[in-house]
Amino acid sequence: MVQPVEWIAYHRVSTDRQGQSGLGLEAQRAKVNQLAAERRAVVVAEFVEVESGRKADRPQLAAALKEARKRSAAVVVAKLDRLARDAEFVLRLSREAEANGLAGFVFADLPDVDGTTSAGRLILSVMASVAEFEARRISERTKEALKAAKARGVKLGGVNSGTITSNQAARDRAQGSAERLRGVLRPLVDSGLSLRAIAEALEGAGVVTKQGNRLSPTQVKRLVKRLG
Image 1 (cartoon, rainbow, N blue to C red):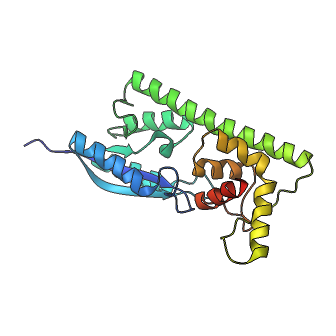
Image 2 (image 1 turned 90 degrees about the vertical axis):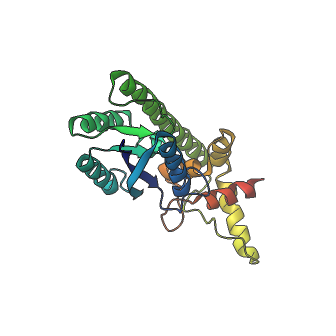
Image 3 (image 1 turned 135 degrees about the vertical axis):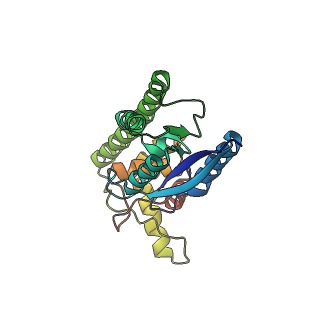
């Protein structure tokens, strides 16, 4: 009887209860499980990375790689950018995987790409480069919009996105926050970005909550709604 292929699942989510926008934990699991069923693979272990302020801090990825080495298994990821948006980092991981006894990486969004081959690494490099380029472009556009807003005399500080309450003063403050960010938010919304991606772009440009945290997708949605 042929033994099923073993996979180690690696998921990455943000600290703002990701799932209301973007690829949340359950969505990532669903994509991985669907591909596993198609390939007759078995997910024998799962590691979930919760993003911290230090993007280089990836203890769960290290643990997933260690488990994969122990089992000579592949690491499966729902989407390439859940692993990284850095082309150099992705290629380094692929090379290290091959050199250390891993069966490589499997990406549910790129199921036919074999990262252990030269052609596969080239494709991964191109896709990761595109993701990295998009992330940098979003950051640059956001910073330009912020600079233009400041030049117009707009004060940007912490965002009071708040919840909708019966308190008129609270609603007025929330509306004021939205109006201050109109010149920044509108280009991001018009570009078709997800709410999570907009929150990431704003954080990269220094726009966070008054507590210093990244805006959640729900908070971004409220801001956009207030802009009409």
